[in-house]
Amino acid sequence: MLLLGQIGEGGGAGGDGDWSHSNGLDYDPADDSFILSIRHQDAVVKIGRTSGDLKWIIGDHSGWGAAWQKYLLTPEGDVEWPFHQHDPSFTETGTILCFDNGNCRAVPFNPRMAPADSYSRLVEYEVDEAEGTVKQVWAFGGEKGEKIYASSQGGAIALPKTGNVFGDFACCRFDGDGRPSESNRGDARRTARLIEVTHDAEAEVVFDLELLDRSDEAKDFSSFRAIHLPSLYI
Image (cartoon, rainbow, N blue to C red):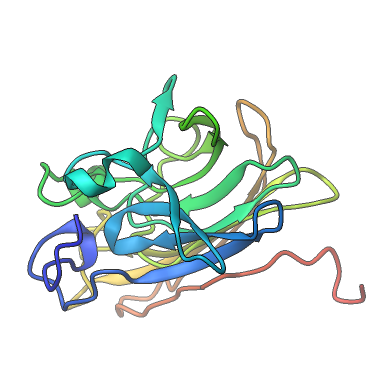
């Protein structure tokens, strides 16, 4: 992997040299490690805090060189990999929740999914470090819920009191015909969706806020790392 100078937005080649675009982390006190989202490598990894040692990689197995093969977690059951993800965090049960932007549903240089067909997800993984395996234990988006494509930014938060999950579908781009897009130019426009869902196998939407402009002008609305507050007075 690690295609220096070749990775850009949308999972394609010819980018701006931002090969990592690391965008979120969480701490694991059990073994003094961090989980880290490396967006432009389409990978969530675990790294020792003091040693700097790589422990494992959650991500599509395509394209990784021989030196990295031993770190790739083996999928158990039906696992859909994250692509260009954001905001990984540990839940109270030790699983890993993140916002899977889903850009192209492919790593370079595999066949890309068209933006109009792409989708983003809230997704939860369970890692067995002893066995070197990963399971997908929950998801919302795509085939499991509404099909929404937020090609950049985004976040996922497990809510402690209700057990629900709050998703920041922060930057949903659309072309002039209203189709999902990855363009920032011309008549493209952006909207944001803030959605709370239950943590059930078939998640139910309990809150849905859309930020958009309905005028004829291509005005942009987006959010980034929105948070959920039970009350402004707590």
